Image (tube, rainbow, N blue to C red):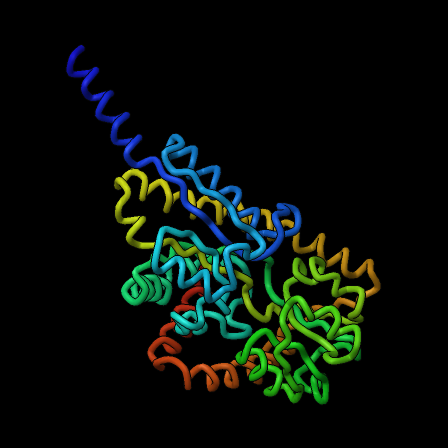
Length: 336
């Protein structure tokens, strides 16, 4: 009895000593039906707190309340912090992440899932990220499906249909893609996209259906092309020193909670894609699905321009590794 009492007391003392609250920051509103990142964060919080029996509590900060992308990445590298970073947040510390975001890289969700879980590229990337920043890159969080092109001028069914159009770009890589198609790309902050499209500063943009609806872009766009441009994801990053200081069981609980919350997110996001496309269509937007020949033309025009842009920023080995891993992901996706 004495031994049992002592063991119980030691367990309680360890749990009490490790009891901690950590902040988690991310983009977008705190609405689980609109913002997939908030849905992920909410589920991740619940699973961590459940599996650590309350020893670790996560406090959520949506809407970038703890700072801009670059500020939050600095915070997660220098102190106890959990952050969900977009590509914009990752680019200053780990531009190699863009190698996995080449346009038209994945034909389906299954291939993208395998790439961001089991591929050699992902294993190398997570290791290199930790070595460079001290933080852990745990998951590529699915946030909205695949990106689609929209515009207000004409249907886009081939690269030639872009000629002369003006597109809102999120970053330099999108500018390179638009220019490869004969259009122009202008960086516009997300908060100004609706106005830019309404006033004609830009004719079009690309985003997954979720963000088109969040931004009400269906009100100022007439055509949408479901071209599976890029897999839409953000990245779960956790401060390394804080993580390493936890008991191994709690570290395992966090890693498993992150993966499980992401799997839950994928199921929800993918189930919602067609519903969101239908909502956009019901708003009067003409929706087009390219055939295999048309997708091949998009790929042949778009990928080289993106890779040329990226080659000036990262080592070629990362581009080659991502290509090889994507090819393997495609084989895994079709079961061959």
